[in-house]
Length: 628
Image (cartoon, rainbow, N blue to C red; front, side, top):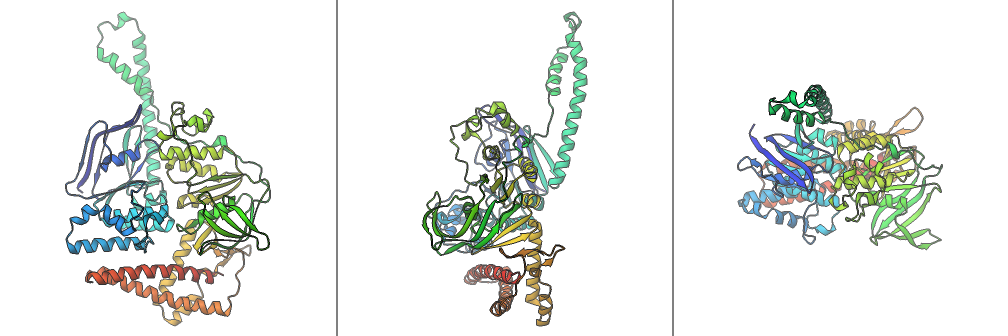
């Protein structure tokens, strides 16, 4: 394989803090590398140097293979708020587009539209200022992927994406014949995309072929071997120390190199590698939790014509661990803000129990129904946008507890550091500590894995497994959800919430079964379709305790009979889904043929976007009726 990138002797420091010094490594064609290191050790700085956005302090040498194209995905995407999506991407890639002939340019524009459609951004004319954080990230990814660069450099590509978008990106990168170097905390994404792990530890680079589990095993072996070697050096040092302590006369005429070697041995003998990790043992426990947590009855929330919550009824239980999943914009954060009272009623109509509510951004909407919170409830709410630290404050100003800060990997020499100098992950870790030290009995975490390093995530998971209160997690991290939650609230859009009993992986398996069945229905004859209807996964499996395993309506635990009208609707939906899937397959075949003229390519691309949107709506309704 060709060597795509050779690094020699590059360094980076910020003030007295050395991130890395004189490091070097090589990346070959086809390598898909995950860069792992604790927060604050220079991962982002290294990527920026490689992408030409920053410089090495020590000069050094960075050599890319001649004529390969490089695409860099930064954590924060630079955009013009007034640009529409398509214009934004084309303006960023103006130099690349100018190098293309007419036919290649048309193909490039088509690739952009196809990626946007696959990322559920079919309205190319929408302005950037109207997009959510997750949608902006999908625009940035589209710009990178559509370039068909030879080498992708990506800094946290899954941050702010919903799980559907992550799984699409994961599938694309795992199949693509590309070379990539990325920083990620998503362990499933890492395992499914990467074939190599690169660790940056104490200023050195270590390479491990294979996935995340192999990295953990080989890293432990490396540390054990290093410490065993340290023990040998200490034995030699003891002998040399006896010689150094002998009388000056005994050392007269001895070689100076031996004295120099003694000091080198002394430095090496002091080096012991430890598995440093955040310790949460000092913040375990919670305030006393009463029998009532949060009871919701017929709660609906509308903002303009959009329904975020539709007649939601549920009583949260003591010690339960709930995961919340759904696409960006489906209302997950809105739901949490309603539960916590972050949307405050400012107008009451007592007869209808309707409230006009608003948040800090003065968002207004209509809330109906009852949300009743327990008297002993003490909520700890970790928000995506909750870090309102003064950049001139120090670490010690935020948490005035040196022992606890030390346990959270803020050593004594960092306590005076200003917040503005901390990495994104270090700020997140400090923010998490401010919440946990208050010992809440209901802990709500809204995308807690963003910017946290993998080591911190592992320890956080262990803490949350033992948390002696109730837990609600909004997350796109599948590994995090699988390890922690008992069941899922699935936000389907239009205010519909489904309760799935099981892990996220089990939920995805359920959905894949449904999708496989739907494809089979599109090919099956009427007789085969009737046979398939008898084994729909939406029917559920009756468990030993009489409950229903799988998706269930938000306020019922038993399947009800469909009305005649609903049954007819279900039958009609199955016909429409079959027709839409067949049309989608035909369009995809045409697009992949390479024979369509540009105007037909444009029409086909736009129609596929419409079909995907229709399938999304109709499949959700089919699922709702099938498991009603």
